[in-house]
Image (cartoon, rainbow, N blue to C red; front, side, top):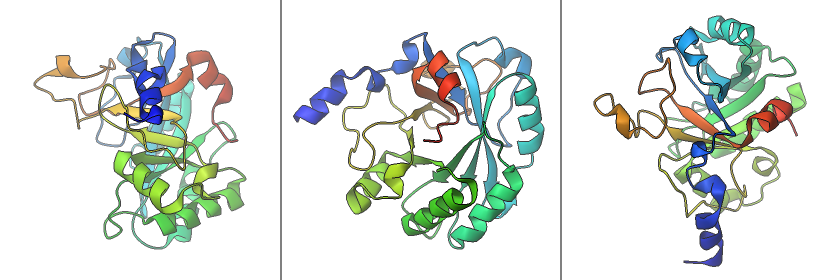
Length: 237
């Protein structure tokens, strides 16, 4: 094992950090995920919600309704755009027009895969990110699984666009010993649980169960404490 991999293996942020009761958690639902708000409120560690707002040129039908409810209940709020092929400036403008982000709203771009025939390409993602910065004055987070994170690191290294963003990392396992450094040194948020590794027939095997949600809810751990998340949100620097 290389020294960098050994360091990662020993690093607490890559070894089941959600087991630390002081570490903040978030969920990132979309319109097909169910939420029981009263039950959700019984978990004090879940302090933020990042909801899909747009996918290509379509609006998530529950985005606005849930934004109102979440803010009323005191959750930190965020919105993400699911990137589709082509027209990155049009997609960025549509996302901002839909979300109308306030100063304390987190924003993010979901780069779902390397397949540019199904999802936004990396080159288009750079254009999207720069457009958001131009119009909003801050950068979005970038959501990427391990394969996408590795590909960006290999193709763009310390790119002046990607490297200015924070990483929202998706990896559905207890420990990570091979994080692909290059563009990002670590994650800001780690999506560690979803229907990818959590099934309705065996909820006991899920890495973390959020009350008021079903097995298919995406759950994220923050690289820091609850107090730190609340003070630094929406991570615009």
